Image (cartoon, rainbow, N blue to C red; front, side):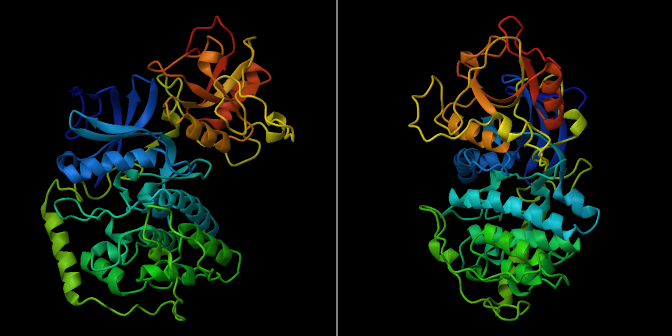
Length: 508
């Protein structure tokens, strides 16, 4: 059931209720929907809730693909993929329920001027990791752009907006014939006319993002749609005057077979250029995952000696004209699919849009047992691994304790003696416990995990009748536990280990 708040502005659903979600405030909007800071009243946590345009729910093909591919994206086990808590349809409204991140999108950073090369390369490397995970799962993101790259206060990068993913073998159009994506970053094959859309299309877009980071300028400009499309089809990007020009040129080759085989290879070449080494041309050893993009899309051919030489124009000018005509149709559809809300509003745009909130607002009284932000980069932010990780042993593995997930870190059962812990992550989805807890343990080195219904009564014992697994750090004292909570931030919360403290009591 959907109800409308009394004080929301035109088109703003803040204050309304959608199923179990109470929409607190709109934090972004763009071509593929609106994003709200929302409270999941069932799980009692604050989330970023993306609501897709109503037109997409009427597109039967898109609706089916969205539900199927969202399920796959939700299973991606990479720390740089924004966690998807839930997805589906409520009263005809397609939605994605994601972790909310305190920070800003890459677009906001670029708006302040060109990004320092070392920072740009670091961000590209993190997003490349997320893309390779998606590609290995048979998914193509299709909308890589600065707005869909989120950075928290520690510089940890997330790739968001997997609502547009496309699995291998699917076309890149809606049933109305409109392309989905952002024109400044769309590979030539995205405009039709031959090569299939797949992982190399994402690599192309990531190279465009690297170009924009270094120059502060959008690929092929921002004023003329005709110039943008013609540029992607026929012209190379202008030189940046930096050591990264050869990397960008290969990453944005018109022929997908001439690009880097993976996003990780693009990132490695960028790191080599940053270090003053010419990027190597690796031998074609990677093969496509079973059931994913056609392996021929990973094949390599010798790259042209002149990285700025445009690829031969195989298509006539009619291709550009046809593409521009399609754009004109899209622009004419006020409230249409692609340009449902063009540009950025004062809340930060479609990006992060997917999961941004002010750092001072991410911890609220409603967030009690939520997923937390990623582990800080500095080694002093969390307890050292040596102090908590169990020593390796060559003895045969012991029998699993009840509830153990079979991970390298065994399940723990801390005593209910009044000690305190800082909980950094909760897993509440049956069938995904092992993946989620493994990813959380990797994000938070030295942490342990427990199952709440096998632990103290101060923990919530279940969620909708299902067990809750929690990843945590123990504190030697209450003050230390609170310090851990404050350093990690996000949705981290502190609990006392006993059987008398009421469930949900914050001890800090």
